[in-house]
Amino acid sequence: MKTLSQWVCHNTYRQLPSTFGTPLLPQPLDAPFLVHVNPHVCQLLELDPQQAHTPYFIDLFSGNADHPAFDPIAMKYTGHQFGQYNPDLGDGRGVLLGEVLTESGAKWDIHLKGSGLTPYSRQGDGRAVLRSSIREYLASAAMTGLGIPTTQALAIIGSETPVYRETEERGATLIRVAESHLRFGHFEYLFYTQQHDTLRQLADYLITQHFPHINERTHSHPDGDNSARYALMFEEIVTRTATMIAQWQAVGFAHGVMNTDNMSVLGLTFDYGPYGFLDDYDPTFICNHSDYSGRYAFYQQPSIGLWNLSALGYALTPLLEKDAIDHALTQYETVLQRAYSRIMRNKLGLELALEEDTALFAGLFSLLKAQRVDYTLFFRTLSGIPAHQIQTSADQFAFLMDNLSPLQSWLLEYAARVEKEWAANGNTSQHNSALSQSDSQRLSRMQKANPKFILRNYLAQQAIEKAEQGDYHMLDDLLAVLAHPYDEHPSLSHLATLPPAWGKTLAISCSS
Image 1 (cartoon, one colour):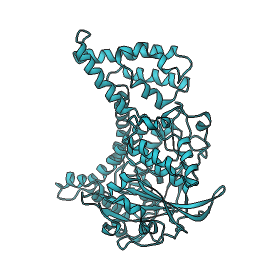
Image 2 (tube, rainbow, N blue to C red):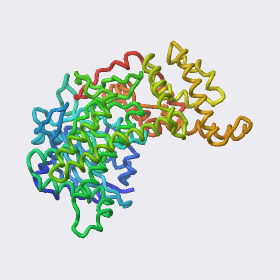
Image 3 (tube, rainbow, N blue to C red):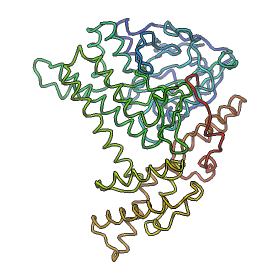
């Protein structure tokens, strides 16, 4: 593990033309202090976690000190917000400090969120507050623990700097870590401002820095067939985006603001604001209080992902023929459906893909929706029921639903489906030892696919309220369970119970 001064850093993004952003130092916060540090992210960066408790760490990431190898820049990009193109976007409250190179060969962007005014702040103050910083800090930890691609967060720095939202709050910074901060909006910016040569340069940069296998696949072309490289690049973005959204849907995650400037070209869950995990299963769930039309409702996310990719494809028209763009886009639904079906089969402990599974899934979702059953707890409960008890297990779900009759019917179908899978694998009722082993494996797969713990909005809100009073113990507890959400954590099981009624109706907006 290293100290901050031992970090090897550079900033390849700064080597791009000046149109890509504005060099800018963070604005200092008053009386900064460490709120929390994530040891897992420290490990990624090969940083000694004790460094976070040093005055230099706190000063560095509050704008009160410099790192000799950092070269900060506020990135310029644009994008479609709620379906409308907005040219006046960019890093309005953050700067890309640099890239940390690890001995393992990894390269990590270090981005400071809440760093103060930039040329892209519009009417904002460029600041973040403790509330929004904690929400992103916990969300990135939750998604990492669930195995969903995401940006991460190293630490939160608090301060005494007053910041005005609905009420007076205190300024904070979040140290965001990612393989890249490139967004769909970076490409849209260069397209709509007709900087087509620079657009090509950005595509080359993305391929070289993050998709080197594309150069290897097209290396045999003596004429350097760039159209083939760019087509593969776009296909990679389509595949990564589709896979990420399939994972969102399977775990019950709603992003809330799927604007194109919030979409990562690496398929990372990016820019956490009014996100939410499903409590009751409701496909029309809108987690963003400001989303009056429901554009980004939970069930809309797959189609919005395709819409955003189409917007990106349009921005790539100076580099690609329409046929190549359309070909990549046609792969989206297939990739998403296959990934989603695979995850859902894992959640039900099934390995074989049978045509009847579509009806089995649909029947389950219908009853979950009709009775507004807690999504996470239903699947976690199901993952603890042995096969020979499935048909008689309806009572185990009584704490989640009032009418068990529809569930009883579905459980009979599910039990028959499990038996069909065993029969296809050559197991019969006469081979009890084989069935026992097979069932143990089934339950193990299910428990690794159905988390016990998710980041419910009310838990995040409780952690925020405690942290604003200087109590960070709940952050400790949440980070522990979110890092390993499939484990039991018996001493912290209270974080996995049904949410209170008030916890399901919290209003979360973009300012969150």
